[in-house]
Length: 260
Image (tube, rainbow, N blue to C red):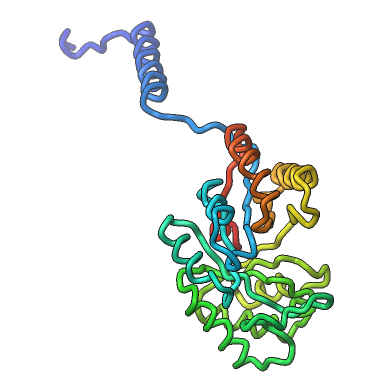
């Protein structure tokens, strides 16, 4: 055999050097070219209800808190269209805060109220009319509705109507025996469930405590869903606390990203 056909001896030093060069190159690339995101401590979805009764500075200040807050507007109120258009212009997500019959509060003042006496056609008519007023809304949640959401037939009619127009539903869960969530799931309507009301007691201390509870839930749930209202005390707390939570690593997501 000629010398030209002899195999060169294996050089382990060269092999180790090559591995070192490749590994070091990957490390340098990752360090200087890829920005790693800090771990998320928890994911929170926050909805603010009852927009539509006013359009003053307090209302506008809610648009300065966080771009991923979802705004729920009551259709048929004096400023519903104006708030909807303002939200659209700033790229905020909106839903319809649909009035529904309650056991202990009179919601009959609302033109769009859903109640058990309506047949399926009238339910669909009212829902479609609400979306005509607020065409960029992506879904609905119930305003009041402790009686309405407990009605299986009414929730079936709501689910069928939403399915036809590809909208989602948030169960505000004003009734522990609500049929809304399970009915939406059964009819293939994307749905989510409220876990915490921030401001059923309107003091900054209580609102802060409820927000802390929502944050704690975000540690054990894929997304923790809270509802607040267009109230000065709520605004005061959220303006202070949300920037702090974001800085600490909590992520706020829009409702459309958390429905299933």
